Image 1 (cartoon, rainbow, N blue to C red):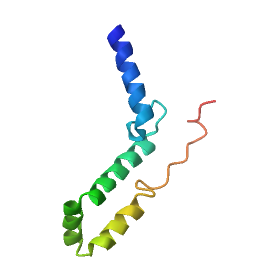
Image 2 (cartoon, one colour):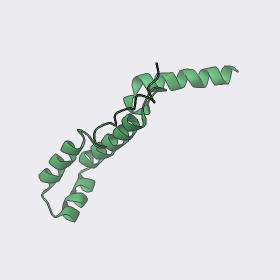
Image 3 (cartoon, one colour):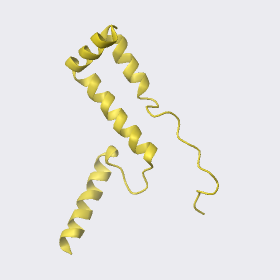
Length: 89
């Protein structure tokens, strides 16, 4: 029983420290957006990967970097509107 409590406490610490880990109220859209943003951040942060994308897209690196930064605004598109029947009251 103590192991379960300790694991729960560690999970809560991770959730407060790192936004991308999520929490019980995280929606699928929020979780996917965090994953996509982390991916784009990795691409931008590793010059070799950015160079590969620039070569593949036949664009200068600064254009590809700007394109990835713009995609980070809404990586999965706008969130879906909830139906009235799905809302909890």
